[in-house]
Length: 115
Length: 113
Image 1 (cartoon, chains in turn purple, red):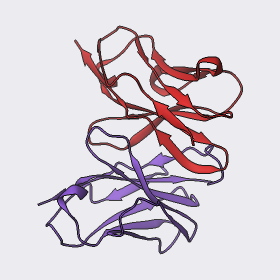
Image 2 (cartoon, chains in turn yellow, cyan; image 1 turned 180 degrees about the vertical axis):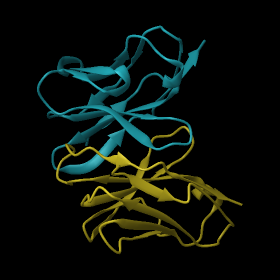
Image 3 (cartoon, each protein chain N blue to C red; image 1 turned 135 degrees about the vertical axis):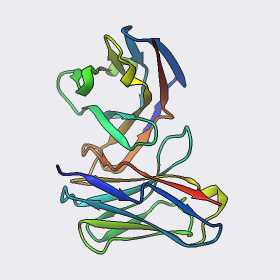
């Protein structure tokens, strides 16, 4: 089945120690998104790629970076995680970007714990 | 910019009873509306969506939603709830020429036996 895969499902990192979260998709979608979701809150968009074009949300901290080496893979790098970065990180994909009519397909998420 | 309000933070319903979750949106033109469900520790799964046409939309898992433009609402309903429906439900709105989805704060549904 075509899907969005996130690895690892659970990640524990130390305060200030860089961490990378991975997302892959077999849907061949052009757009990939990264969301941060804190407990009992709505997902918050961090950034997205349309093909190789990167778009950072204005309020996304510089501590968060992303890479998309090819259509299938996208990575979220947190350069110096703080306690406030503990959250669920969701990857999503969609076929198109223009307008809100393209539904987003979400992965299962990576739960990040910062100690 | 578009926005979504889900007035109910938490709803408790008995198994077999009906369920209705409220969603109100703010957007000047025709919105693109979605309902997602999130089980504990999982990602979001699309239940249904409305883009145009028939205002009563059928989704997966026996859910339906009705778009009411006059009330700016897109309420989600299920006639008979199963224990497996316990989850968090998010309403989201998209708009033409805007790549972002605006999510509501979510409604947590608890199902009691």
